[in-house]
Image (cartoon, rainbow, N blue to C red; front, side, top):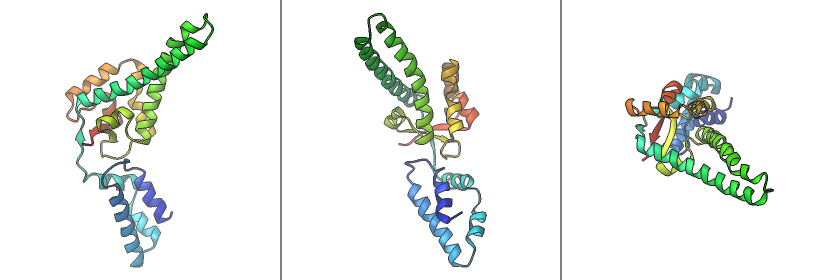
Length: 197
């Protein structure tokens, strides 16, 4: 493994938009280069630095995380849901106007069903890739692991399970009673939503 590949694997676990992201990368490259200049083999240096996820989490442990309150989280979900519903209505109405009369009445309900699944899939991939959906970006929120690292695809998928299983409100109630305002499935996946501002 090269130094650049190792540094990139550490940085892949640091959420996009973290204020110290570039500083962490520069410091890590400098640290590796310094040890190699003093005669250590690159393989030994990388082995001493350890697992990239563990190293990323150790860097992130110095960054204070502020748990997001329930209201901004709710507003972010409303924004995301509003965008999904708006798109479904526009597409459904467009189809209703262009489809034959015997099929047209089904266009809007089908679009709403597709939009609800699309909404959950969008949330899964947006939170995995960027740590935030459009609504979370507007509200200044990000989803991270409890240590502050980027969440995995599996964590992102499991976080959205309450939407498919129709017990979202029960899951969301946990956020009102936990120290870090975590939903039940956030506790289960060891993730949390934090405020960036």
